[in-house]
Length: 63
Length: 309
Image (cartoon, rainbow over the protein chains, first blue to last red):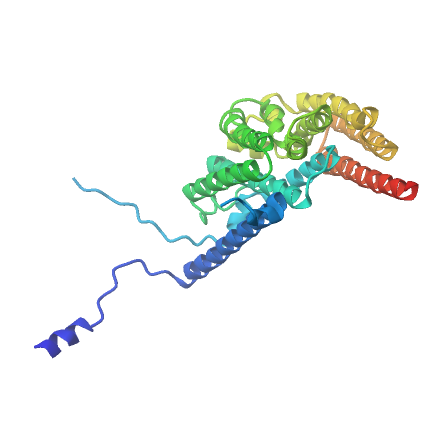
C-alpha cells in the first residue's frame, strides 16, 4: 500500500500554470540581467559617493 | 453573474524596449545641456558627485520620457513618427511603462537629493512634473502654445546642472534656459510644418493644424529673431569668450536666414526640413563651444598660475 501511494505521488501532474514560450523566456532573462546590472551600478555609485563624502572618516565614527 | 478575468500575457519586452521608453536621443540632449550648466558653474565639485548628478538627471529625463509614452500611447499609435514605439507595438503595456517611469523618477530625484543637493533634486522633480502634468496631460492636447510653454521642461537641465554645483540658481544658467526655451518653438514648428497631417490625424492642436502654415511660418521668424540675440548673450554677459561670440553670431545669423526662407516658402517643405535640421546643429554648436570655451579657459588659467608660480 505504501509503495503504491509513493508511486502515485511520483506520477507527473498536469501543469496548470502559464508556460513561457522561448521568446518570453529570452526576454525575461535579458530583463533580469539588465536589472542586475542597474542594481550593481547603483551600489557602485553609493559606494563611491560614500568614499568621496566621508573619506577615511567613515571608519572613525565614535562608538 | 459571471466574472471574466482578462488573461495576462507574460511580457515579451526586451531591454531595448525599455531603453526606447527612456527616449535616449532626448536624454542625450538633456545630459549635454546639463553638463554645460554644471561645468560653467563657479566653484568645485568632485568628479564623482558631478557624474552622479548627471546620471540622476539622465535617469530623471528617461523617466519623464517613459511617463510621456504611457500617457500618450493613444496618440502615438495614430502618428507615423511614433507608431513604432513599444506601447503602440504591444511589446510593453501602459501599466508597465507607468510603473517603470514612476520608479525611475522617484529614484532619480531622491538619489540626487541625498547624494548631491536638494535644490537640484527639487528642480529635477519640478521638471519631470512639469513635463508630464503641464505639458503631456494638459497643454499638448489643448493648445497650439503646447510646445512654447512645455518647452520650459526641456530648457531646465542647465539650471539643474548649475544647481548641482552651487546649490542655487543664477543669471548665467537662466540665460541658457532662455536660449533653449526660445529655440524649442521654431525647432518643433519647422518639423510640424511637414508633419501636419500626422498631427492632425492624432488630434494634436499644433500651430500649423490650428492656425495654418502661414501663421506658423510667421511665428518661426518671430521666435528666431528673439533667439539669435539670446544666443549671443553669454558673450555679452562675460561668461563666454570671443570664440563663443563669433560662433553664436554666425549660427544665429544662419538661423535667421533659414527662418526667412521658411517664411518665403510657398511650395514644398525643403526650407522647413533644412530649418529643423540646422536648429539641432545650432543648439549643439552653442553649447559645445560654450563648453570648449570654458574648458580651454580653465586650462589656460591653470597654465598661467603654474608658470606664475
